[in-house]
Image (cartoon, rainbow, N blue to C red; front, side, top):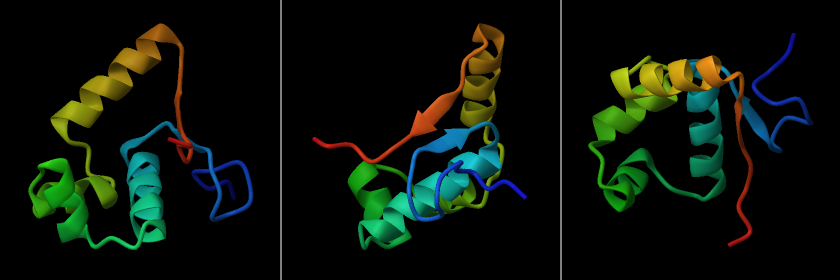
Length: 84
Protein backbone atom coordinates (compact mmCIF):
# COMPACT_ATOMS: atom_id res chain seq x y z
CA UNK A 1 0.00 0.00 0.00
CA UNK A 2 1.36 3.41 -0.96
CA UNK A 3 1.64 6.18 1.58
CA UNK A 4 1.64 9.90 0.89
CA UNK A 5 5.34 9.69 0.14
CA UNK A 6 7.08 7.51 -2.38
CA UNK A 7 10.23 7.32 -0.27
CA UNK A 8 11.06 5.88 3.13
CA UNK A 9 8.45 6.90 5.74
CA UNK A 10 9.58 9.96 7.66
CA UNK A 11 11.19 11.56 4.62
CA UNK A 12 9.90 13.74 1.81
CA UNK A 13 8.87 14.70 -0.63
CA UNK A 14 5.21 14.24 0.13
CA UNK A 15 3.21 14.08 -3.07
CA UNK A 16 -0.07 15.89 -2.60
CA UNK A 17 -3.03 14.39 -4.42
CA UNK A 18 -5.77 14.62 -1.82
CA UNK A 19 -6.67 16.57 1.32
CA UNK A 20 -5.53 13.52 3.32
CA UNK A 21 -2.06 13.53 1.75
CA UNK A 22 -1.76 17.26 2.47
CA UNK A 23 -2.79 16.65 6.08
CA UNK A 24 -0.22 13.87 6.47
CA UNK A 25 2.53 16.15 5.19
CA UNK A 26 1.56 19.06 7.42
CA UNK A 27 1.40 16.81 10.49
CA UNK A 28 4.75 15.21 9.65
CA UNK A 29 6.61 18.49 9.26
CA UNK A 30 4.90 20.06 12.28
CA UNK A 31 5.89 17.19 14.57
CA UNK A 32 9.37 17.06 13.04
CA UNK A 33 9.71 20.75 13.97
CA UNK A 34 8.64 19.93 17.54
CA UNK A 35 5.58 22.19 17.37
CA UNK A 36 2.11 21.66 18.75
CA UNK A 37 -0.90 22.47 16.62
CA UNK A 38 -1.48 25.55 18.76
CA UNK A 39 2.09 26.78 18.27
CA UNK A 40 2.05 26.30 14.50
CA UNK A 41 -1.41 27.82 14.16
CA UNK A 42 -0.29 30.87 16.13
CA UNK A 43 2.85 31.29 14.00
CA UNK A 44 0.82 30.92 10.78
CA UNK A 45 -2.01 33.21 11.91
CA UNK A 46 -4.60 30.40 11.82
CA UNK A 47 -7.12 29.04 14.25
CA UNK A 48 -5.91 25.81 15.83
CA UNK A 49 -9.18 24.14 14.87
CA UNK A 50 -8.58 24.96 11.19
CA UNK A 51 -5.08 23.49 11.35
CA UNK A 52 -6.54 20.39 13.00
CA UNK A 53 -9.02 20.04 10.14
CA UNK A 54 -6.20 20.33 7.59
CA UNK A 55 -4.15 17.67 9.38
CA UNK A 56 -7.12 15.32 9.57
CA UNK A 57 -7.56 15.55 5.80
CA UNK A 58 -10.77 17.55 5.81
CA UNK A 59 -11.51 18.95 2.37
CA UNK A 60 -11.77 22.65 3.14
CA UNK A 61 -13.00 24.92 0.38
CA UNK A 62 -9.52 26.39 -0.08
CA UNK A 63 -7.88 22.96 -0.38
CA UNK A 64 -10.63 21.77 -2.74
CA UNK A 65 -10.07 24.77 -5.03
CA UNK A 66 -6.29 24.40 -5.01
CA UNK A 67 -6.44 20.69 -5.90
CA UNK A 68 -8.98 21.42 -8.65
CA UNK A 69 -6.66 24.03 -10.21
CA UNK A 70 -3.71 21.62 -10.07
CA UNK A 71 -5.76 18.82 -11.68
CA UNK A 72 -6.86 21.12 -14.50
CA UNK A 73 -3.24 22.05 -15.16
CA UNK A 74 -2.17 18.42 -15.09
CA UNK A 75 0.38 19.02 -12.33
CA UNK A 76 0.88 17.85 -8.79
CA UNK A 77 2.28 19.44 -5.69
CA UNK A 78 5.14 17.98 -3.69
CA UNK A 79 6.21 19.14 -0.24
CA UNK A 80 9.79 18.68 0.87
CA UNK A 81 11.86 20.16 3.66
CA UNK A 82 13.08 23.62 2.66
CA UNK A 83 16.74 24.53 3.03
CA UNK A 84 16.12 28.19 3.78
